[in-house]
Length: 485
Image 1 (cartoon, rainbow, N blue to C red):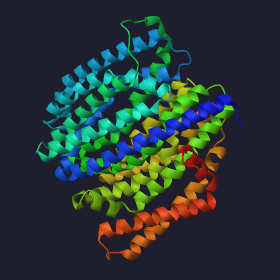
Image 2 (cartoon, rainbow, N blue to C red):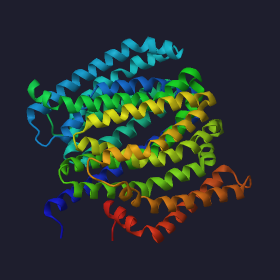
Image 3 (cartoon, helix red, strand yellow):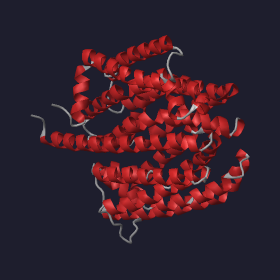
């Protein structure tokens, strides 16, 4: 039998993973269906306009938190005074972000040469006030691995906002249906967080306690701000120099890439961070927990990413319509890069759990410059060039991006790649067979028929290969999901 403390943590982590998986899978499924419906009701330009607005609102949302929620999760000894102080900080930051976005909206509209952005951004600014009031409640639930409550919040708010967005789109609201959807999401999420969480901040503020976490929080925020700018530089450049239409096509491909990443990697990272924070001084258990998480991610994400690359054309034309055809090639390029990103994105919890947000910021700054240069070069060849640049720079940065955080817990790169080769081999074989089958079918089938045939075929191929060469990891994944026999 294992150590009682480890067993208790493993049980809580397993429960957290199951609920976080349920939440993210359900939320992503709702988003996928609503996006498919909205893509047929709205134009690519509508999505492009929202994409431009989200560049600004996403950046401003980083200022709403300033890394304080991560500090709450990471800190071993947490006082009521610090929790209350952080709540009032976030309430003030939410209001400040709203004012800044509202004031800057005409400048953003002028930059993109899109006058409608002024009204869109001013409306979206209200979401910061609402979201700022729920940051601490969400962090406290995550710290205690209470992902069941978070699942309720995520699923209900996603469903209500999706219904609202589709309803407004059917009523002819155009791009505003996407704006109303975002506002409803922020409002419902915050209200439910207060209902689900027992946390009730007091009317007190302790600057001394805030100063104790300020260095960690500000380094993490510096990384998040810089990283956000770099990761949205492609949208910024496409929107500025190519226009709303091309940005709409690129955004659709990128959103499809994010669906499995959100379901798998984000879920694991949400659970991994509090678990690793609890194990921050026990490197052996830390490494064991981390490698188990990474192998689980790879087992699920690798076939999804390579499957999307192989079936990009029938997937996009069937689900979103023929008018979205220009998104096919960007998706084929981005999906393999997403496969790498699904596992490299897990290093964030290592930096955070070890309290080395300063290292995270330095790495993010150096890597970000390389990404920005790649985007600028790729822009010459349109959205396909930008997608290719993203894939190339992601591949080049993989090894150093892993080696630096691994040194904090003495994790060898060889051990990391050992946990990946089996799902990689199974997924590559599946992808090759799907590409071959798709070419053999040629134009003999409608796109929807090809998709209906090859998706289950790919799932069967990958499952069969995994049972042959990756049985142990499959068992561990099923155990983590609570389905082990």
